[in-house]
Image (cartoon, rainbow, N blue to C red; front, side, top):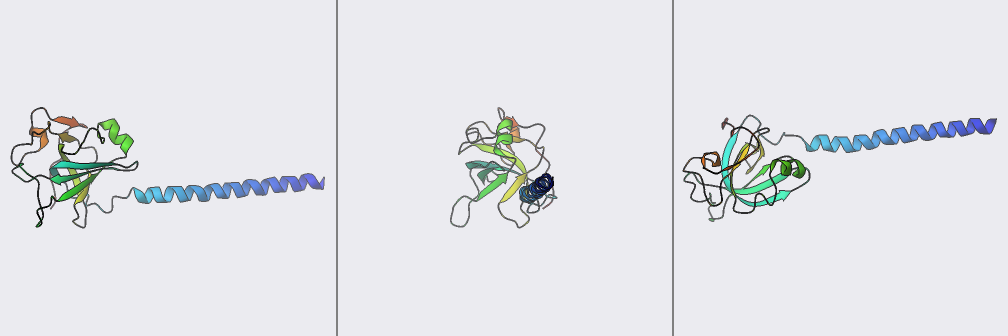
Length: 172
């Protein structure tokens, strides 16, 4: 009789230990994920619409990034620094699987692709931003940049990725 009671007590203690471990494991997984998805670095009050030339795509599982050089207003070249090197920017968007379902991938955006996107720039003024949620991107036809001051949505034969129109710029 006593061994049955001891056995029940041991099983109860094991179940409680397992439940506590499950709670701790869940907290360890959820906390970094919640922190990872913060948009705190980005100025969500500001929207920039930029047109640039892809230099590379980083297909990270959590956030796909397109690295690019912003085109000048004449759309004949890219902006350059004092050493005449292209000024590189990055736009961060959803994960690779989500982005691929939209048509954004390493293969769809090879180096040299001209595209336009709306983004929320970094608060610290750095050359990066988060894609404006729910807004499309436009890819210009190969080697056909937009007219001066325009974006890829104005180029005949451009490819719409997503739905709608480019967002209106706002903020500084």
